[in-house]
Image 1 (cartoon, rainbow, N blue to C red):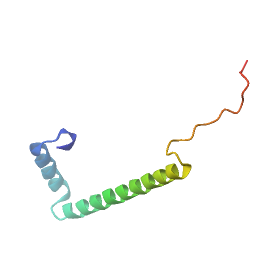
Image 2 (tube, helix red, strand yellow):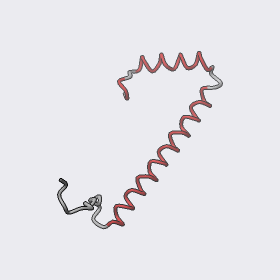
Image 3 (cartoon, rainbow, N blue to C red):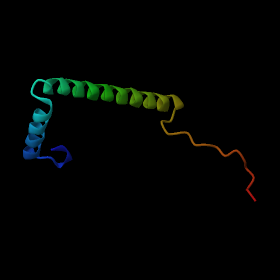
Image 4 (tube, helix red, strand yellow):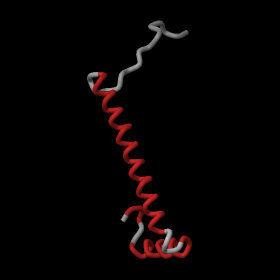
Length: 75
């Protein structure tokens, strides 16, 4: 299980959520949470595709190295 939570802990959390929000609000909360996770995954995918696209445009797929502005050693 993620975060080291077992079934007993998940049941306790579910009971606490039911007591605090009530049975009628739990589906709404689940829907909102699922929608937020979907939007987050979509945003991450868009950013990832953008970064991969920029890497493909640069040619080698490796980040460009910054060139030094001065060839003279500093004193």
